[in-house]
Amino acid sequence: MKATLKSLRFRDPKTGDECSIELGFDTLSILDDTIEFEVRGWYYHRRENFRTEESFTVLYNANDNCIYIKRFGEKDVAKINLEDRPYRNEQNTLPNDFENLEGPPAFDAVCKLMDDSSELERIIKSIPAVDPIFGCIIKSGISTTVGQIVKCSKTVAKDSKLRQKIRDILRCLGVNKLSMLAQFTMRAIRCMLMAGWDIF
Image 1 (cartoon, rainbow, N blue to C red):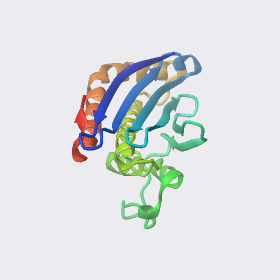
Image 2: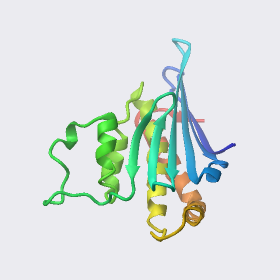
Image 3: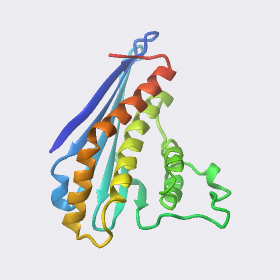
Image 4: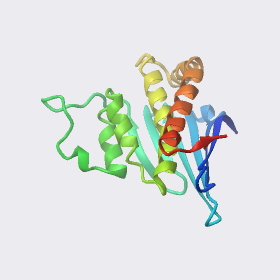
């Protein structure tokens, strides 16, 4: 059972195209020792009269302490192992070929860089999308949920049992819900303002 936490709609004043983003939470996921968010977006091309839809799931699994990002209808886009952080070479910098990575390979690399949120953001921005503006708002939802789960996971004792770990992370998410939604909203609006779109 999914509950909508936040939804936003935007319109391009020049073309009349519309774009919307919705952040949801699966309230039943905790029964499987997981925490699951859904990021859904729609882009309506008015002149061509067709709609593009994208849906991603951000799932934290307490059994293996990993975050999975899945694109609807596809296999996992990313698996972020929270046990692997931090990873650095001797110079405490990124691998030389990091800049050339895109899509799933980029997410494979980011799982070793979880202590650097700026790098996490950079990798999330590599998710392929149909339209740059549309991709930007989708990524705003993914980056917000991943970032908050990562922050909350750091507050949990390593020796916690599964159910206690889930409860502690859920409690942390609840405490930070308003700030998370504010961050999600700010990021999405920033995407649209840069393109000159209106919120409605």
